[in-house]
Image (cartoon, rainbow, N blue to C red; front, top):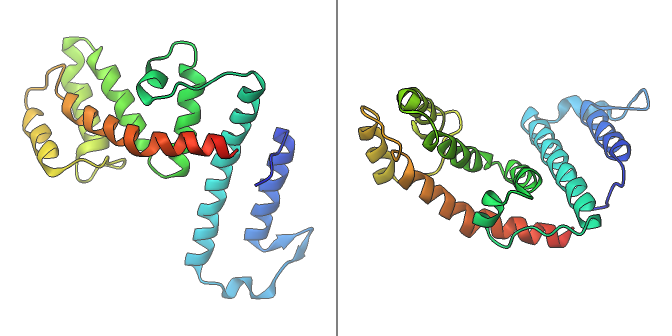
Length: 191
């Protein structure tokens, strides 16, 4: 993969990719048979475009921060707790997770941190929101939890406390720390 040194170059490449997907290039039909390609193949190509876009964003971040000689923390906990790098480091990790279609893990962890710092009167509403968004079997951004943890959370939703999501948050943190974060670090070394 080549490094685009400017946002303009990256954007031009993505626009060209979009035109190829749409079957157009320089105002002429690129391939008369494009309409015969199954829609599932076109959808996969569009998904690849999204993934390439996320990787290009992460690549831009790496390029900028290598130039500034900033170093990422060596473990996930340090990254999430770091004051100096929290915004840029967490954003780069978010981009990486998005490219792997697992961004919901970080979003859940961050939502749990915010939940712990909520006032008592807002706990029930925020707990229900987190449950509906990440835990429920019909959740749009369901995280990967074992059935025992999920069932325990379901039982606690009647009277949530500040530590309601602690076990689930710990399990998701462990998953990211052992699986996603090492791959994220390796991807930075490759670029």
